[in-house]
Length: 119
Length: 113
Image (cartoon, rainbow over all chains, first blue to last red; front, top):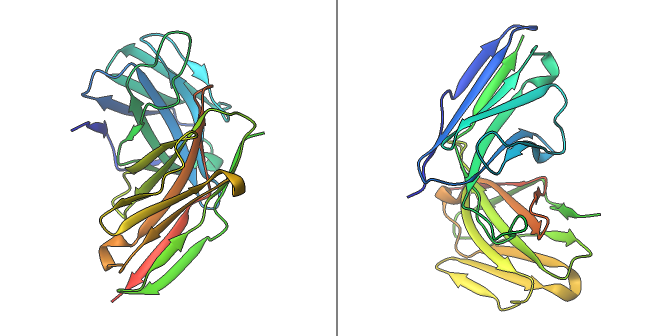
């Protein structure tokens, strides 16, 4: 079974703190994703990565950065946390796509999420 | 523009009732994929089904069934004889060849004993 592990289920941070959310997958997937989930908005893509040291902006990258130094690990960084970043953060991974770009068919597998509160 | 709409924000049923979760999508692509995910209270999204745009056959898996109709751009999900364990948030999602997964707003299903 695919396993996507997020290091924390709950985090409470102060405004202005630097926050790291960690995600590890054990299926040798090339692609990894970070989403945030807010009521009434569904899941929105923050960043994704299709290879080590590669990253692409998603739909809402402002205020976030990412790091992918190893294939199995994808970190989401909030450089200076703000209250509007209080949310549920979900990490996902999927297997490689065919050459030339993303393949629509690949299934994304999700972690259990990190609920972040910024006070 | 690509969009997924789940008009039902919350649904509440009593155990053993059948329930249908609606999903309507918008895309101009001819090749795309549709997904349903379940998010139980534990938080993890669980993959339920994937459908490609060329396969309009309905699918049944136990108490779950899916009705894909391109003519109405809908991909509805029915749970037959619902159970308390079906209580969760359900997400419909669209992915085209460009690769991004676009989620609907989610439908929170509550099944009461």
